[in-house]
Length: 288
Image 1: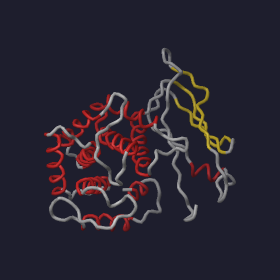
Image 2: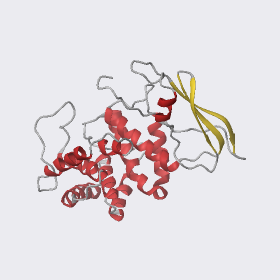
Image 3: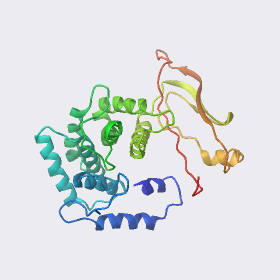
Image 4: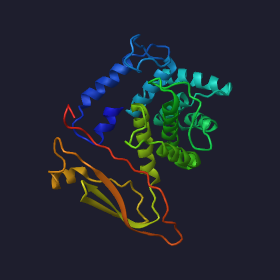
């Protein structure tokens, strides 16, 4: 999944490598709707229950365009249906299943599990009651990952789940650490994926102004917007690297700041509002 997403914004991901990875995962099907696993575990990977492992693999495959997962979906749905009947929904597992069904364009089926997640959302926005995750997360990381995968599933039908999405995203944003992470790697990855999806589809600022990006206190790019702007706002780091080569060099310490300037709200709007944003970057050195 990581390489598939990287290939959408870069040109150095080998398509054959991605294809080989997908084929290898498909080859690990065990014929019962689950996947063959290795008894050995690496750190927290490899210790999740079989159904959670299968749900995560199916999700990553469908995120990459794979559709040959009918047997696996049938097995996972049977597990999820049993938990719904017992009113004991595993939010993380159910969220993965819902997201996979949306990827497969099985909207009616997906809604069954996306709707089921609503019962596990607290008034504060977070989604709870998950057994574990693909990396055996516990505590706060478990809740963050469960909430993030719920948002990812719900974002497939924004109008249907908007009342669920907004508080969930606000809760996720409130849990970011001072360093910009969410504790575990998986919690950070899923949170950023959920927030990015949200920003791409819920972007709305009721006024005119501009975003100013500064690197090491130097203004490097400005993006103006008005109240009709609905696209996600992204800075062009390729242009910044070309125009300010001395800022982006090996060994250079880089301090980034983002400012909203000259903002004029629409009539009747309040200046006091929150903006969700994320910085992403790539290392071009194997020893960063």
